Every structure is written in C-alpha cells, then in structure tokens.
Amino acid sequence: MNNKAWESLYLNSQHLEKPASVKGLISNNEIEEIQGMMLEILRSFIEKGEMHIGLKTYIDQELRNDMADRMTALPPQQHDTLESWSQRIFGDQKFGMVLNYLEGFSNSFAEKAANIVSPLLSIAGMPLEGLSFLFFMGNYGFTPFGIHKESIGEEGILFHLGPGNKQFYAWDDPELNSMEHNSQVFHNVEEMLPNAQCYELEPGDAMFVPHNVYHVANTSEFSISFVMDYINPPSDRFENQLFKSAGENEVLINKNSYQVPLKMESNIADWSELLNFESIKRKMEVSFQRRILDLKSNGGILRKSNFSRGFQFPNGIFIIQGKSIFPLFQQELSNNRVMLFARGHRIVKQNHKNFSFLLEKLNNGEGVSLITIKELLEPEWDITEIYGFVSDLLQVDAVSHRIELTE
Image (tube, rainbow, N blue to C red):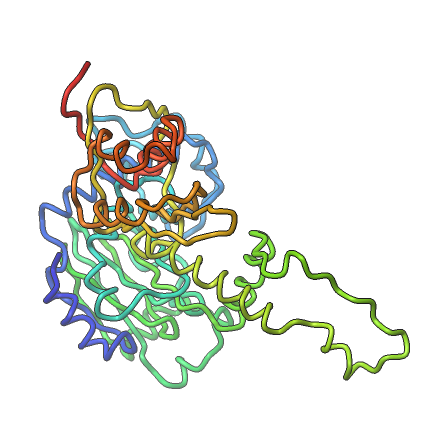
C-alpha cells in the first residue's frame, strides 16, 4: 500500500475537489498481477454469456455491438496476455473496450483493489454508495464517447497499467463545471484541447477527476487502465434507497402495533397524527446502519462478493483466518438471533455469548481452528450449525483457510 502517494493525491486534489495526478501509485509487480486478473475477469465475463451487460466495444471510434460472437468463439486462453488476445480479436484495428463492474466477476480482484485503495478511505472516508470498478483497454486514441463528465456523485480515479502512456485532459472551468450532468458531451476534441490541462500518465500512475469536471483521455498505443468510481450519492437518492431497503428487508420496529382508521371528516393537517415518526426514524437508522456495515465488511466495495463455485468443505483439521481488509460485523436481532455482515452479505444465525469474541479473533487476523470454534460454540450450537457458520464464511470468501492435518 502506497500511503505517501495517496496522501499526495489527496492533498494535490484539494481533498478530492480538483483534478490531480500522482506518480507511481501502483508498483510494477502489482501491474503484472492486476493485468493477469483482468484477463481472468474477461474470461469469466465471456463464459457467463451475458455480453450485453456492462461491455462496450468501439472500433475506429464507433460503438460496435457485433463483436460478442467473435469474443465468445475466441475467449482468452491460459497462454494469452490481454494484448495477444486483443490482437486475435481486433487485428490491427483501432479499438477500445470498456467493461464495468469488475468486482462482480472476481473476488480476487475485489480484494486486491480494496487493499490498494484502503489508504484513501482512511484519509478521505468511505463514500456512502461505495466503490465500483471498470476497465478501459485498447489503442483507440481519444475516449470514444467524447469530452464528458462522470455520473452525478461519481468521483473517478484512473489507475494506468500501460504498457503505453496515456494523456489525460481536464477542463476545470467554472462555467463548464456548472453544466448539468448528461446535458452535453463534446466531440470537437482537437478544438477544445488548448483550454485543457494535460496530465501525462505512465504505467503505475493514477489520476483523480471530480464528477463535475469535463475530461477526456488519449490512448494512442495499446494500454490498459482501470477506474474506481468513488460514489457520493445525492442526498435524495440515498434517502430514498434507505426507505426502499427498509421495506424490502422488513425492518420491523412496531410488530404489535396497528394503524387506526382515518376519520372521514378529518383535515389533511391532521393526517400526520397517524404516523409514528419515531418508528420511521428508527427504521431509517437500522437501514442506514446495515448499509454501512455491508460496505465496511466489503472494504467499501458496493457489490458483495461472489459465492465460491463448486465449494467443498475442507477435509481434515484446518484453520480459518480473517482478512483485515474485510472485517466481520454483527448486529443483534430479536428472538436471540444475530445478523452477521461478511463481504457485503447478511447472514442470520442464532446468537451466542462467545460470538463477539470469535469475530474479534478473526478480525485481528488470528488463525482459528475448527476445534477452537467448536469449543467456543458448543453445546449451544450443534455441529450442523457450526459447520454451516464456517461454510458461510468460506463460501463468500470472507476468510481464508489452510489445512493443518488430513484424516
């Protein structure tokens, strides 16, 4: 984790208010590792078969929807690099690919990304709509969709992986900044460039751009970049999401209370007397707390982890170990139940007096054996409940495990 680079970016961007770049935020070893993850993500995306969701492909600056069949027929192979696979798909054409929601295709990438950006969250805080990731790949020249702004509230941080350089242009102009999002995109790029600030990005560099600043990038040689959306939602949208979540998750505060009929002759000014505003406030608080615990348990990432495919419970004596970037949280419920927050998932279990102690050990990074877990939770929990608890943590990739002894 490059704390100094993050501190520099945060200060130079005036606390994420102005465009700014920083050199060498990602090391060469990390670049190679992340490029390998991108290849695996592409392979998973193509295998999933939903090529219309999250992918945009451009050839000679034009959006193309006819490349999915070719990608499906020629998925990345184990010996491929991103560049060699792109050569098979696009040949010598000028192309660009954009793939959204990277964290939804790879738990490993989500973990790597969470570790990379954790110093920023420590400095700037965690955005209330979380983090999401996408990548750009190609030799497409200027961004095909023109000089644009990010979506409302989505502050963008671009991590350039190379191998070629990228020029990033930003127009931090009060008049342009005040224009409504999605109201205008500019395609007269060459004409507007003299009024932009240019940032030269080499592999490993990062670039921050606020959501209200117009920008475009130039990628003349084959390169890969991934972008983190740091999402600060508009207050109205966020509050509406909390109301919706409270309803969908049946946050119950007054289970034994019933509404009384409305008197037909009553005035509109009297109707609010039928509402329990303390109850509404409490439901919002619970919904908000759960939203925050979802994010904190997932390193700030919006989308929860994928369930491990083909999961099998480990044989023999093994140890599970928590991941500091993905702490586990709990919230007590009624009827002696507890809600566990793990990698964005909510798992309801029977409560136990030693549950908090066990989570603390895992959050401290201690290895905990199945034998120790049994000693802590039996006899209140039977063996089925204990195995179910451990399986839940392993399946959502909230803990790692290692075999100590095989039977």
